[in-house]
Amino acid sequence: MSDPFTELPAPPYYAVIFSSQRTGQDDAGYGEAAERMVELAAQQPGYLGVESTRGADGFGITVSYWADEASIVAWKRNLEHAATRERGRKHWYGRYELRVAKVERAYGWARGPQDE
Amino acid sequence: MSDPFTELPAPPYYAVIFSSQRTGQDDAGYGEAAERMVELAAQQPGYLGVESTRGADGFGITVSYWADEASIVAWKRNLEHAATRERGRKHWYGRYELRVAKVERAYGWARGPQDE
Image (tube, rainbow over the protein chains, first blue to last red):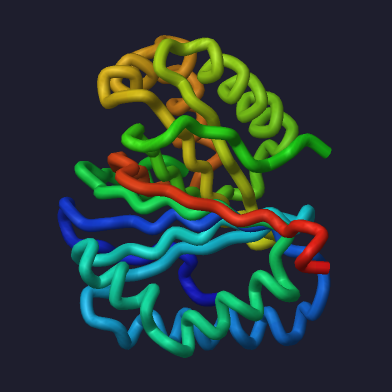
């Protein structure tokens, strides 16, 4: 299993918070497209990283991180991405919400030997 | 099943993006505390809503939404919340990352009869 956490630079940077409910339709097509979108996003200028998870109820949250707003707008206009979004509305999602936010501060914690 | 989406006002508002890896320890204690924290957060001034999900691998993302930064700082200082975070580091989490962000724009989509 690959590490689900992404490593990011110090803020400020931007986050696209994407909440979605899967329909349950076309799991294979969805999985393939989701993987391709992660690969394609990673090639875009300004891309910093992504974290994503989905529960057994089909509700998921994906947060992608970007250097600035211009990178987010350019990614939205990417033709393959736009075509995939169209398939998403047609088949894969019952609902989604997207919020674009500027990350102002961040911190983390990881278990060390002293915590065991 | 309750609706996993939260209804929010028009931006601007703030998001706390919390990514975490569960240890697998103490599922019962964790579940009870998580429920209590959602209930307690909802009583705080400036609280707007929360969306949360966790996959079978134990990696989860919770995004809570707040009217302003002062509300987030006050929630962080809440004594019961602080004590629960301490239990989280001791038992429940292997790692977490927290990012505080200002939501600048938002939009959504939901399937309608014309999409079927």
